[in-house]
Image 1: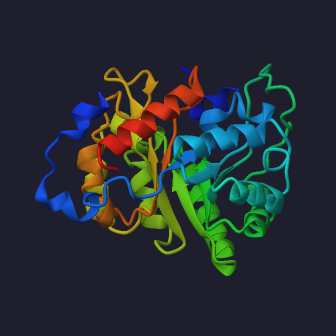
Image 2: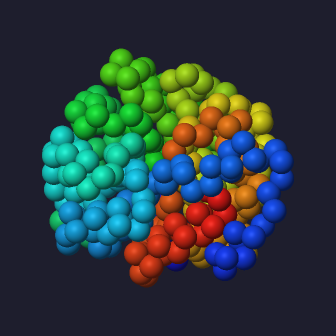
Amino acid sequence: MLNRRKFLVGTGAAALGALVLPKAASAFLSTAGEHPLGLQLFTLFNVIDADVKGNLKKVADIGFKEIESAFSKLPGYYGMKPKEFAALCSDLGLSWKSHHVLGASLKLPPGTKLPAGMPTHMLNLKEDMQALVDQVAEGGIPYLVCANIPTGTLDEIKQAGEILNKTGEACKKVNIQLCYHNHDMEFKTVEGKIPYHLLLSECDANLVKMELDLAWATKAGVDPVELFKTHPGRFPLLHVKDISSDFKTLEPVGEGVVKFKHIFEHVKEAGAKHYFVEHDMPKDAFASIATSYKNLRAMGI
């Protein structure tokens, strides 16, 4: 399986609709299907650059209303300046809500070859923070997300917190909210500490919020709802991603073991405002996101 984390470091519906929902969820789910669903464009990494406009139109035609961008093989934002990409999205009825960037320089193992056309240096918050903030501000995007950052030692975690707080301050000046996106590695003990918990406590809660990836949290044995209860309002963004029962293969949403019904009963506690479907570079990206969209709507999400 090729997922974003590995790339960065090494590169039923009708039945679901019949579920009885508990009363506690009724306030949110009584408007089933009305909340705009988003897509993380990393899902389309292998196909989007061939026809950016045409592929975004396919995304809109499925029913997605919001998008979260990431890096691609083309320069800038899928070959465009921020304002150009924002205008294209708007023309297609898509609202560009968020953008993913690296937290630190990409360190590839010797001999690793990046896909043709990708730059050898990818902008990152440690070295290029202000440039990245300025670009997002130019595009009129409300969220900037750190996609990952080294957390393998306590020193790295400390430095990560400093980078995130500094970026959060710069973002606040231009009315952007910084968030941090997790994989499963942030929940693995490092020198007796859990990196994710340290980031939650050491980063300013107003400057640095979280985009919780539901599949990676599930793989790590973490109940997202418990995080929501412990840190209410800290999770404005969610990555709606699913994973197989052996935790080895990412799946279309609703085809794996992530407890979406349980999680979405508590989105108000989370402070969640935007939900981005993601399936890291599946074999057939459009079939995957169509299935995910259909299953989420059948679940009342």
